[in-house]
Image (cartoon, protein in one colour):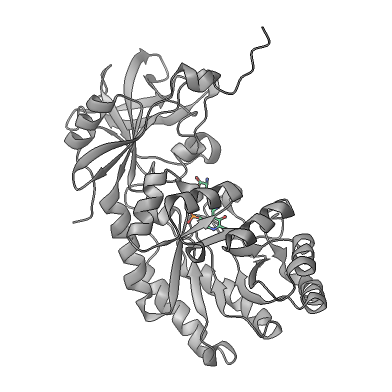
Length: 404
Ligand code: LLP
């Protein structure tokens, strides 16, 4: 029986802490992590949780507690990971488009680094030479992922050093005697197809002979989880098997024992999270019955930003009659969470739970319309604990300088 929170637990938590509320279920994170470690036990693998998905410090500490490492996409995420108690060797900083000063800080902290531009690679080589092992992020020119906005490995993408610039990479590496320990690719998010990862490895195979000190192949994140009922998640066992075969069968890689790294975000925390909101207004019109909630695109932007589907449960009336509703937020924009969706009958005051809200939910929230960011609660061993209080007026004013 997969770990999930019951409607009663969610309602009780919403009553205790108010809405809108992000609720996370610790045991679900652990369940997902175990799927990864079990599936990949046939290979020498390390997982680095892509913390950009959800950085609450208590989530980071839980991730550490279950034995997972952490991947960061900004120097502040590195600082948060250190604050959460991760050892520098458990922290990876996969950079993109950043100032070299952030790389310097990451080196001082002693964390693993993946560099994604020739410019920073050259600066790195000049300053550190062979003294600090480093990774290079390659753009493999592969189209993958749920939609273009979250596809990062294709020919038009800003991410990574294009694979066709191998000569230039080699020139810089040789001139500065850089210790290239890792080759990294991340092609996108929501990737169900195991073959995409195999294709990525095949691109890297061309590069492997050029970097004799290589120890790690980092394939990034992007494993898919179900958002729409009936959808399947990436088959981790199959993926591990295919990756193992790909390495075993390759003449160069077969003899070499690379460590394999992954950076899963959604896979670990998407399904653990629920955004619980309360219905504020019902509005019947000729085209739709609108149900407005006390939340909006300021709290969960994925439907508006990516046309992402988030399943909605009317947890106050789970057995009600099915009827078509358009669920919207209260933001002064068209913030439609679901258009003409069949839901069990909604009444004003009902609690709605938005599923898959753990990854890129709170993390992408803002104070747009001067609304408060929601509180966050972690449920572990059936006990609910507040892990972030709701904003108040002080939060809206705290950085403003009043000119009198
Ligand atoms: N590694 C790197 C280098 C990444 O850029 C990302 C995600 C990950 C790992 C983790 O990917 P995941 O396992 O979570 O798919 N906000 C978007 C997703 C953006 C992903 C950005 N990079 C969304 O809500 O769909």
